[in-house]
Length: 230
Picture 1 (cartoon, rainbow, N blue to C red):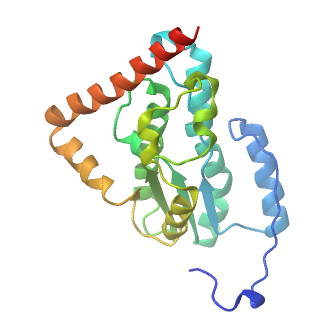
Picture 2 (picture 1 turned 45 degrees about the horizontal axis):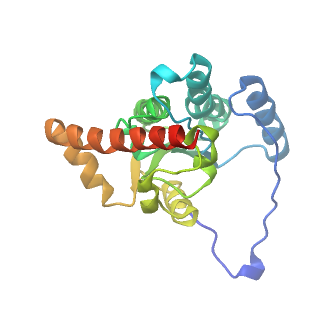
């Protein structure tokens, strides 16, 4: 699946286009440009995602909609824009980057978790629909990635302590490359976190109270920090 040969023999053309994936018209225009230039695409990676931290009662409907429009509808817009060309060629692979938060509800991240639950559910349904078409789809669900995600003002100047366990972007990038050649529905990164997902789904009455306690503690601590700072 990956290119073979020496570094000298490899030639890549990199083209970048600016696009707001939450805007369906912009996505359609981008897809038209790409198809006209290259004729088709082999791999589509839906990776755009944002999060806004805070309790549901404190967030506006606009903030929750913004997260859902970027993380979930943006993925659908891009998938729909390129899916037909893949089906016509009976070839291609879609990689949707979700999160372990698509399996665990996190206090303070309801909108974000909802969007990732939606990504996983949509992808699973499409996975069954694409059976036998030559087009594949795989979800990559990392535990968390060290990016600018937590730079949003809603997190304040203090990141949750559990971010210390987050992954380097390079680690997740390698998982995405593996996913683009995989027949699996979901790849969880790191792999051992799958045990936690299994435990939560198998023994929810034991795991949910523990997870809830952990994330409620983080949420309440962050709010106390903001109040003290004010």
